[in-house]
Structures are given as C-alpha cells and as structure tokens.
Amino acid sequence: MFGMGMPEIIVILIIALLVIGPKKLPDLAKSLGRAIGEFKRATYELKDAINIDDTVKDLKKPLTDITENVKHTIKKNLEEEPETHQTTQAEDEVNPVHKEETIPPQDKAKDEKKGPEND
Image 1 (cartoon, rainbow, N blue to C red):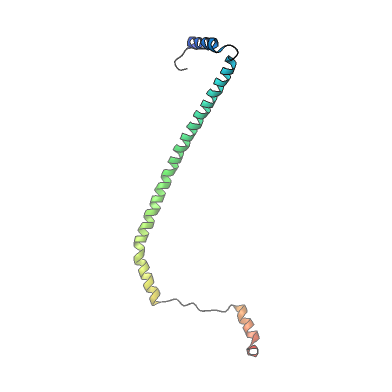
Image 2 (image 1 turned 90 degrees about the vertical axis):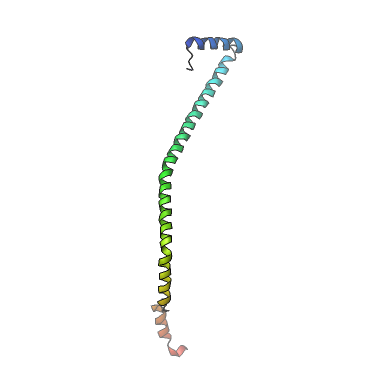
C-alpha cells in the first residue's frame, strides 16, 4: 500500500498512539475507516458515471448519423419538390375538384316523408 511495508505502518501507529493517546485512538480509527469507505464509494460512483458517459457517447453516434441521413434526405426531397409542387398546382387549376353536397340517406328519407304538404 503506497510503497509502505509492515514496519513503516507499525512506526506510524506507534507515533499516532503517542500523539493522540490511547483513549482517542479508537475514535480516530473509526472516523478514518469511514472516510476511506466514503472515498471508495465516491471512486466507484465516479467510475460508473464515466462508464455511463462512454455508453451514452457510443449510443449517440449512431443516432447522430441517422439524424444527418434524415436531414439530408428531407433536404434533397425539398429541393426536388418545388418542381413537382408547381406542376400539381397547375393541374389543380386546370382540373379543379368540386365537392357535391350530398344528403345522407336518413335525411333524404325524412324529406320525402314530409312532402309538399309541409312546405
């Protein structure tokens, strides 16, 4: 661990025991253990976030390619469309479509029943 062997760790613990004292040493060890645990959890969360970012980037590239292809196709169709749109307008002016007003069958039957006597 950090290039320290067992003798170095023992020396550090003896110095900590002398400086801090035997009563506060267990509390210090607990808080140090908690701090190390939180540090490890934060490290794992950071690694997970980095992996998620990489996954998102991997998924985003094909979507970007598809979007570009769709934009290109739409642009190409819009460039071709004005010619077809103009011919369609010209055809509509020559052959206008007239809608005939039709009476639904039920209404027609009611009108026949009423006859000229109700007018």
